[in-house]
Length: 92
Length: 92
DNA sequence: TCGATTGTTAGATAATTAACTAAATATCTA
DNA sequence: TAGATATTTAGTTAATTATCTAACAATCGA
Image (tube, rainbow over all chains, first blue to last red; front, side, top):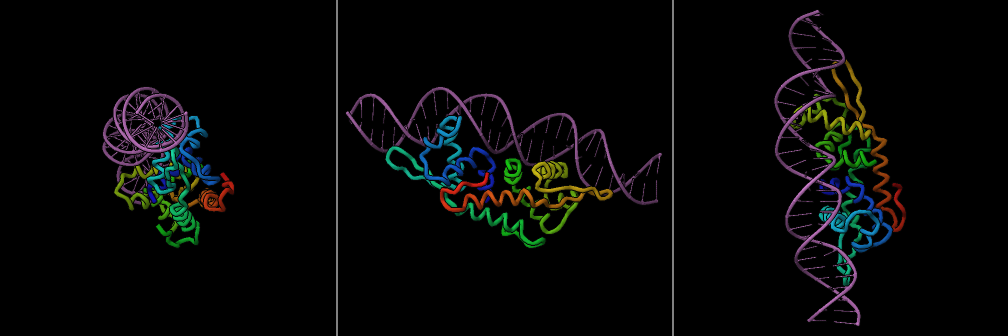
């Protein structure tokens, strides 16, 4: 979870996740959406991958990234815990 | 929202929020829960305050911190948007 | 198999951040 | 008002991070 929160703290990475919500995208398609070098985007993707917020799969010449919602659901649970009745213990 | 995600990326600050979910606490009471100097905790509190995740109120000699759930609800909405039906646009 | 395309890895640098100690500020009490 | 308590602010340092360019690796098509 710590990796996930760290990964989510960067606006570029959150935007990447939002792009991937619409549809799966190759690394290059993702990089095209930003004024940032491809290596930097590759680095952001590897952080998202390490946090298990995305998964990647090679398709021929391309590497296609897609959302992995499992960890996002855990984060959602954390927030639900925080917003629940006063004194209730959050999950984490 | 960016400030909020940044603030939430630090485990110490998330623990502070969880402590404040149980009850309001003074800066000193919060600092007592950690092996970190008071000035460092004060700094974490100021980041949480800037992100509007907490509010503070002086009560005599003490400064009492309490949760502000408004921004947390917005973050919750962000996650709900991400987890919603594929292709649906998140709020943010 | 050669050249083009796609993406990652390596290495460097500048900016941000979390931590500390020391000093300042604010409040209370004797 | 002087001293004690509570907290923040200032200033420093070490670690982390986001970015870049250059070089490497993998795949495809002619």
